[in-house]
Image 1: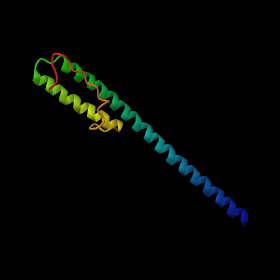
Image 2: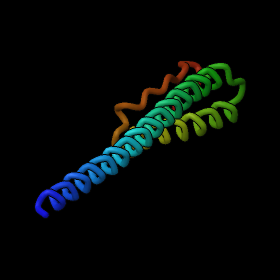
Image 3: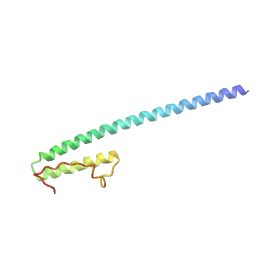
Length: 105
């Protein structure tokens, strides 16, 4: 009788361990997918920021410069939010190059 109880206990423990292992494996795969998509979005935002900086440098009118700066600010804020930083208080991490002939508004 004791042997049967022990066997049931061992089988139950093994099943619980396998279920826990499967759950942890699924969770790990989900986290890896999340990290991968987050990194690709961050790379895309960095590419967009570079494009907007080039657009601002080659802009021919003040309206185009203003529009480029708006899009640049949106991309930078999204990047900071993605990294978990506060865009309103953490301005040291935002580097924007302004051509000397344009000046500052």
